[in-house]
Length: 297
Image 1 (cartoon, rainbow, N blue to C red):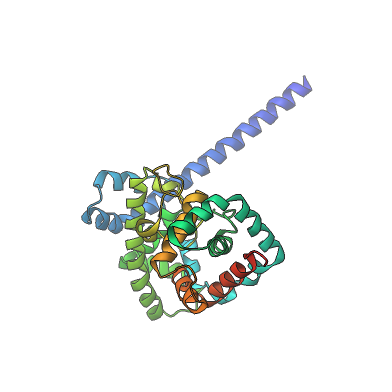
Image 2: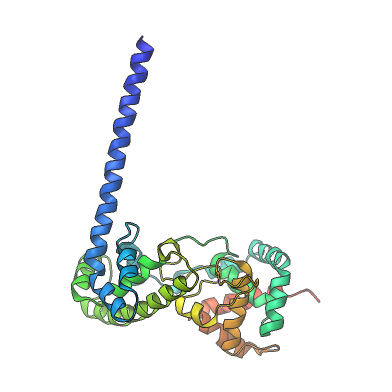
């Protein structure tokens, strides 16, 4: 009898806790939906004005998982390439893993080199640095990130965002406004490219995660680069940057566009890779890793 009462009591406590959890979860969803309406109203109007279907846009931004990503976007105000430890990618362990990757995807790498003249070592080096050979692909929602940055074109949204980040950044309001003017326009163009890509591939835009800057997939392509340079590497008539064959082929396509060719000089190679990431430390380590991946004579 005592055991039955205790079990019943535990069940009641459990159910009560479950109800509280569900209540707060639903409250959070409602808050996110409310924030979406509040922050993205002007953005939705702009997208519809630029030709996107009104019903599709309205449904998209009414989803509970679509909300203003203030925390992630605020990282732009403190991020510094110089603080990143690029030396880790040239460690013996990283090189060992990259060589295993090259052996696993040797057919895909060879096919890309034949089509675009970009050797497998440089493609692998980029994938290593970008996503640790495709093993680190999570992060914030691409849709939320780009929508948040693009929405800052609206003065009211900008004021609300500034009120939350002003104490944690060294930027003045004037510097912040200059940053927003440039970044919101850039993000809006990337958002439109993202929506076009996901529509073409029949992917739910809210389902894709990536970096805090909006880059996605194994190759960490921005949406505009997907439209311009991404390729179907495995012949399935789809472009999926989370697929290694597509990522490898797309990187080769990108590099060729910017001037890569067989027998390229180191100086020219440096300039081409700099297009991929405007960081000298990044380019230095990619070239260093690629050199170490070359077959021993």
